[in-house]
Length: 543
Image 1 (tube, rainbow, N blue to C red):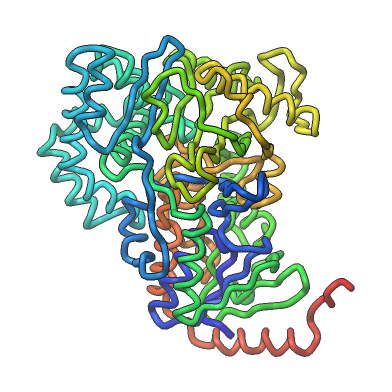
Image 2 (cartoon, rainbow, N blue to C red):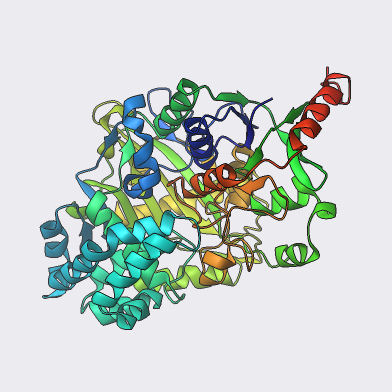
């Protein structure tokens, strides 16, 4: 009987398992998919000569995360690679804002939009230099972050106090207007804010856009050499080296609750896996509470709050194998790992407004990834492994382009939307479609079938909006990994601080489990549960 059972081998589940193993606990991780990694995987499914990441590709949060740093994954084979430029936001008139780890390059690109905007960017970066370390430690700590929060508060007071806090709470459109005369700096902030589901007019989108921009400025947007799955391989290799057990192809259908406590899990095959000390769930919040635990074990207030739980946007993604590099209209986009495709801030607002009205956008804002530019191992010399994703409504009421998309996402609708995404790329890279050797479409239902946590392609475990952050995440009054069921800990992106491959929800859940003392008599109850299972209290496997 292991000390802990971890449900889900996504990055948060694997981080949690590693930290428990480091503390001397025996750990068993159960993963529904045939391979670990959750949304951190790659394959050669587009073309055998090309490596394509299935979901996420760039990891600025991992590069900045003290949680990931302490695991020393480089000792287990992980290597990072960077594109010549971190990010570019081209416009159809040929201008281009460029984010580069060399701040002089970033500043020069913004000065081309308006003299003095390079200096404005440097001012924003100086704030990051004063606050960044304490901010990341506070962000990734359990809520409330007492020690790191006190240090951060002291630095915030020294850096402008309430004025700085006001700036971070601003919508990104307003923050950009206050800080920059030209469009370049505004585009970098706003495009980065839309890595989450934060429209340019949303509260805190300014702070999130600044955070992502400064992470890129300082750490870049690195990618694992060889494919996203190399990060997963390092986590799983480290876990096994410390005695952890990973079982794939094992779907958990129930958290077993006895005497008001979580004492194990039951799999789809009918096997009961008892846990001596804790169950940690790298599982989407509604699935954990409504399906795995059940209403009979939960307070009525939580069940009521779950009705108000808000997912983030759905996602539509296309992967490509390209015969040659992307023919960008502007040189600034050529060496960028990530390229933001929207013709100005107003087009970003228009895109977000169409989603809010449940319309499939006619000019989808696309995040475009050039993976061979970032990591030359991804495809043959002279070619490019590429992808783009955009967001669509979770429930579709209409199609802003008038092409009849309904959100059914059958083969016809997938092809129409993929063509629309390619046309958006063509606006900034004329001739792009002629470079396509092969493509793969990952519509919202496809993404969910490959990782159940990505409900309808929602990639952040719930909205990033202010009303579902910190003490409101995943529901009001929580903000911590402990659940109403003793012995059960939430370790997914649904917990504070939310989405992004930084490992914080998993680490926070592991630390909470380690602090919990095993109640008298519980170990005996768990041993009895395991004996009952061995005696036949299970459903025989099919076939």
